[in-house]
Amino acid sequence: MIHVILVEPIYEGNVGAVARIMHNFSFTSLRIVGSIPHKNDFYLAMHSEHLLEEASLYPTLAEAVADLDRVVAFSRRVGKLKPVDLDPPRLAHYCSRIPDLQIGLVFGRETYGLTDEEAALCPLRCHITANPEFPSLNLAQAVTIALWELQRLKLLGEAGPKLESVSGFELDKIKAYMLDVMRATGFFRSHETTNWDQWLGKLLTQLNPTPSMLWRLRQMFNRWQVLVTGKGSGYGPADVSGPEDEARAGADE
Image (cartoon, rainbow, N blue to C red; front, side, top):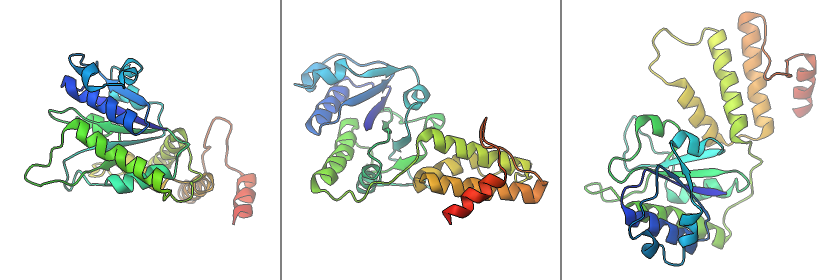
């Protein structure tokens, strides 16, 4: 399911226009960080007022995305520190392969977008190519482009086979495990220039791993820890690596 997330929208017309385009393309979940500007919204949301009335409000972006499996931020900024992962057509293809997961599309403030802290909550970044001399699109227009690509791919039936991809909870779990092993084996330097937490989060989200792929990652990192420290570590409260793990891994080969 796709959730459109607007972070502290300030122009009253944009929210209504977003609700209308969501209705046009059959999207129903609108989440707003902050409050809904009211003036003129219901006029611009003609025949789509129910989406405004049913919109979910959150005090922070962190709370708005806490229950989602994948989160993609839309940004006009590009550069070495702000790499582009997707454009709207590739975003549509990415989302179409995992229709059973909860996916958030995050659109920042009309004035200055997302803060660095908010952007860090979104492992993937989508960029809409525009005139480099004037790349900033209107909020409602950006939402329109994104949702049209999603709808177009569905109508054309070009989504491709579904992936047996794991939930956001499982991605967070394997990422935490990988970071713990890296820490236990002395991987980190006293001064790191790479944010490994964010890097792994982006890698896993781009990979969209299946359950068997997660198992292989766990197996690989557990063996790494055993080789370096002489002892592995459990993956969960009732999940301890042992001979039965090797047997299961061997059966998958």
